[in-house]
Image 1 (cartoon, rainbow, N blue to C red):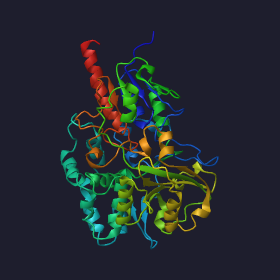
Image 2 (tube, rainbow, N blue to C red):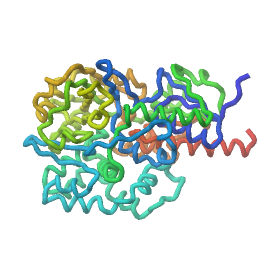
Image 3 (cartoon, one colour):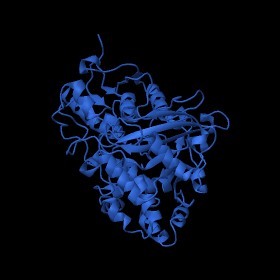
Image 4 (tube, rainbow, N blue to C red):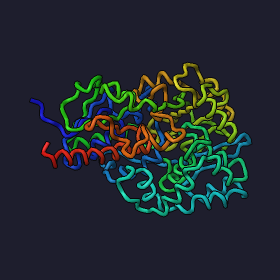
Length: 477
């Protein structure tokens, strides 16, 4: 007879694995079931182009991972997770060969914005410097379950962050500062004038100053691999190659956690379709992974030292690209986020070669080809880029959705990050991890605090499950 588990987790992405670890290290019996042959979700590393070139099919750079409150409590370095920091976290090049930069140094960042905006940038971030640990915990924790560690800083952050980023951009007089900040907001693929988009840009900036924008040595796969090794040591089990189609496919348990989209949860459990009827999926990504014969020949010197390069360059171009993708039109001039991990991790490619990726925003479910538009944008700031391409792997919305069932229509955020849904996801509820079934919980990035490889959605959901299990124990069930 199969013994009753305390918890079963569906999906071995960072949130599902984090939830499993949190439960296991409190003495609960936990099993994880993953449809793919390897763990990872949006944090995988594969040879997508040529032998010896190790690419990250989705996430590659992890400011929120390095600064995650829950990862900080785990000995993940013992299981092989090592953060590598590029000389510059991010650069934002311009047509004239210059670049604004996001540095770990506030002074260097401010100086790159020009004399008219250096002071405004310092005044924006200074109230939060040295307070990342408390702010991240307060901002990313489960709502209504813990008093803020630093309520004054959280309130100050809220007064700024809850406003549209277009309001915050008015603090700056010149385009370099506005565009650098607008590009950071665009990482969530939502129009710049959306509710609480100022918080997105602030979080990315403060994360850079507190802990950088690092990459894991060997690729993003190192994060779920470390979580899996830690979970196994704690007594939990992980089953890969196990696709869950119905709740009955799973062993009996006192609680079930789904690191899936709300859509998948409703399909598997047979309930929840009405509960999540208003949940929206947003713009998609069109992603290109490259094997290169050398580094990207950026005209701007700073871009050659940055782990991430935002390719825009102006606020108007960024805003236009975001609005087009969100309204159903593929942009002719896409805003790009690019990553060049082999600058600090050369072992991910043969000697002298590089891996590089870029993605732009396109409408959800779009089936076109953005390759030429992407490469024209890169060539604009790195003439000769195409000459260095040895191979490329292309993934539009259909391919992204096929790789990861959470990416509905190619939405890598597992839900639109615009309007109130940026913060209140997946439903308007003080208990967003609960579902219509008292023993079933949602722990994916469709729940607060949302997208990013930080594990906090899994941690927060696990706290809800602890209460559920405690209540069952109190009742003797």
